[in-house]
Figure: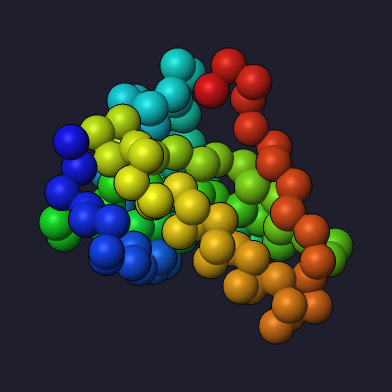
Length: 117
């Protein structure tokens, strides 16, 4: 059971290169085919690719990785640590993406994730 209480609103923050091992841990637990740590490092350093996450007890518990293209966001990876699922963390990430749509003249979110994940 997650330590997130329903009354708390999860805060989405930017994921940094220092968070790469936590991103890898989340993918390893939540996905059938996680990316390699090297691929995650490259993604976190890539120009035009942004990653936001949600912390629980000072540890990254959920994240999404997206690319800005055309007038849309393309979500390339999205995962929530299994022990924190069904607590609103994934919803907080989607809400944050939706908040970013209007201010920078973007109006669509596309999911580009593997069916197996």
